Amino acid sequence: QVQLVESGGGLVQAGGSLTLSCAASGRILRFNTMGWYRQAPGKQRELVAIIGSGGSANYADSVKGRFTISRDNAKNTVSLQMNSLKPEDTAVYYCNIRLLSVPPYDYWGQGTQVTVSS
Image 1 (cartoon, helix red, strand yellow):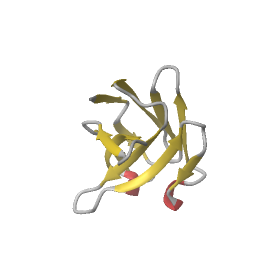
Image 2 (tube, helix red, strand yellow):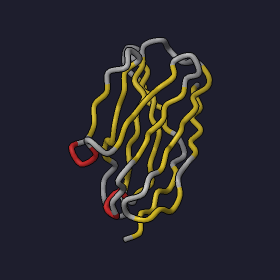
Image 3 (cartoon, one colour):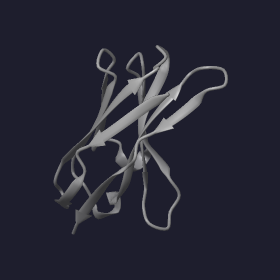
């Protein structure tokens, strides 16, 4: 079992910044990916950013150049620095860890609300 605890959501004005953090604990395999997804009201959950254990990262086109994902393998934490926030970034943000077992397995955090006011 793996537990994920998120922190850092809140209310911010457009153009502002927020940092989300997520700490994983439990039986974490060495090979995994960690990432952030978001779900806005009435929409499907979508990938925001993902980072491998080696540090390679991928971003949704909508956040490239504004968001930066990072991780600390020693502490099993992942962070998302969000700059130049837009109202359309408003959503519940979920931390994810995918254990690269056979088959792979996903764990999710409880979600943290990010609201960007115009």
